[in-house]
Image 1 (spheres, rainbow, N blue to C red):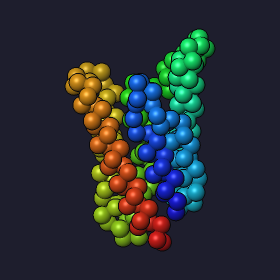
Image 2: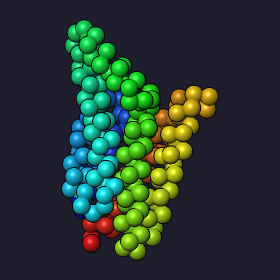
Image 3: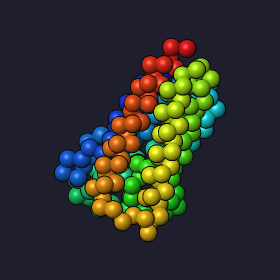
Image 4: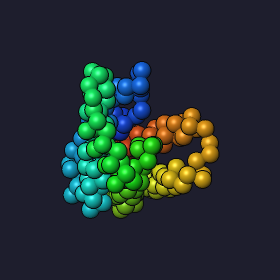
Length: 182
């Protein structure tokens, strides 16, 4: 199994900004994740299903990247704003797009697929960590999806994104080390 591509993709999704510009474009991260999921699709049907929401996120993040490039070169990007805002509305993406509903669907499919494979081969620690990650992502999605709950300062949500992403990286590293041995 080639989890290294998913790992590289997740690193690209880390929100590392310099002067408001994400130095690791998300669309590249989603492209790496799709490639990694493509390579492991035969090991669990959930890996194949996870490609669908990642493809949607790839399209959306590509629009956002193009929009930011137009903004940097001071071109009028009205068309891109219209596309991204309508796309955002249609797909119910939230301001915290890294853990939007669509990202959560991808993550739940991926990590539950890892849980199933790890359980099948007797890797109980990995199975438990991936199941816990599913609950953590679901919890984060719920607290950021209901406006009445979003009462914490934005920095708290940013810290939670980093914590969840780091936990995701550890689960993927663990999956790579254990499941790829089979």
